[in-house]
Image (cartoon, rainbow over the protein chains, first blue to last red):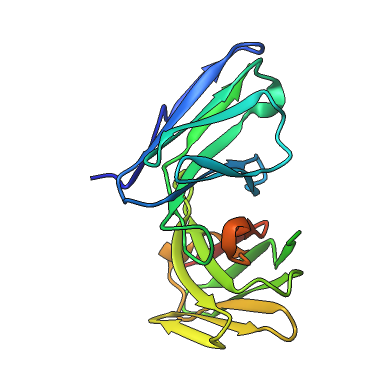
Length: 113
Length: 113
């Protein structure tokens, strides 16, 4: 039974399109995150949600819009996709904000052509 | 904000040797330091963590040390095996509502049989 699941696993799309990535966790965690991993493997925080409320929004273009319908789900919608958006996007969750380890989803490899 | 530096970026060792990866952090308020292992094409997985009230922690062949005064922490892997080959990430968090993990840039460890 997967703890943090993301769909889709792979996403290939053309520049200018709009796409969504879904994330669900069944761990009962309060906090969920989106991280972007670029081609050099660098993991960078994009958003953090605690109990459906946005608590961290790093300097991410406003083409990226997260939505959390409930504390078990955190989706990521991307408008007007650009070549530079190509990366692996990881969803993660933790029991609460603060000093807790994260459980990561399996990632979504987004390729913009 | 927090900045985490990680060295080396690549590390190659012979099977059975020890491997050491070092990280420094900038925010003296950081108090949680996890380490993640990411195998090729997989998700990052938590392997060990340490909190600021502890100087060292061991789990079988892996250990982590923390020097809060110098603001650095290290991962030690003894008796390395080929299955230890992966990218290792250190991270730091200050806890609280802004307690998202800030990751180092990763170390690619190769263990040669």
